[in-house]
Amino acid sequence: MNFHVCTLFPEMIHQGCQASILGRAVIKQKITVETTDIRDFSTNKHMKVDDYPYGGGAGMVMQAEPVYAACRHVKDRLGENTRVIYLTPQGRVFNQEMAEEFSREENLIFLCGHYEGIDERVLEEVVTDYVSIGDYVLTGGELPAMVMIDAIARLVPGVLNNDVSADIESFHDNLLEYPQYTRPPVWHEKEVPPVLLSGHHANIEKWRYEQSVQRTAKWRPDLLEKHRKNNEK
Ligand code: 6GU
Image 1: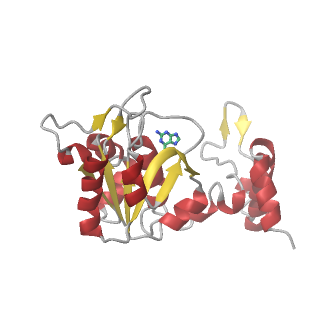
Image 2 (image 1 turned 90 degrees about the vertical axis):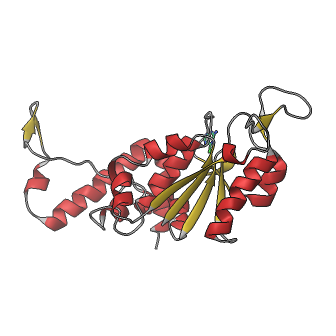
Image 3 (image 1 turned 30 degrees about the vertical axis):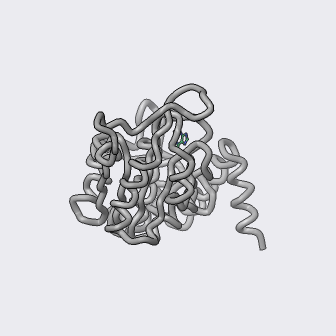
């Protein structure tokens, strides 16, 4: 799967996507992460890409033309039907279900804004999806793009070593993950729950499910509600 990011800060994306599992996924050629620097498409001799907002107000607005030219450049290569995701606190709040849907695409383009936003006219022409990563305000779309790339990439076959773990983790079927333990069996006088050492797989599975339900009830009752609705009948 190919991720393409239009941004004023390409180095942020490259830095963030070269470490750990994402970095390994790139080396294994399971994903590609490429960037287009919107500043390269400035029409201004000082390479400016922003200007004062019409109507006044604080901050600067990214101009339509450089954003348009950058997105055109990428779409000309990836295809006219490629989805363009604009990262904005005004968007739909990203969740696991959206990650699963996006992971079925072959190519995705992320458009990262800065300053007070991007001229609305170019958004109307190029953006297919408006996505937020939560109810708080960040300084730009780069971190949200990386959050989305991470969540989507781990669903791509071969990115995680163990194919099962992508389904059984937190949020699968709206339950949080059960607690995990590894050696030693006693640490700071705390024992590993004995059932996990019993070798009795049915009991282990039952214990883990109960733990998941308890945790979800305690921390995310909203999710438990959804889980129960999905598992009625
Ligand atoms: Cl996608 N962008 C910005 N700037 N802030 C955010 C966000 C996105 N999602 C949550 N806060």
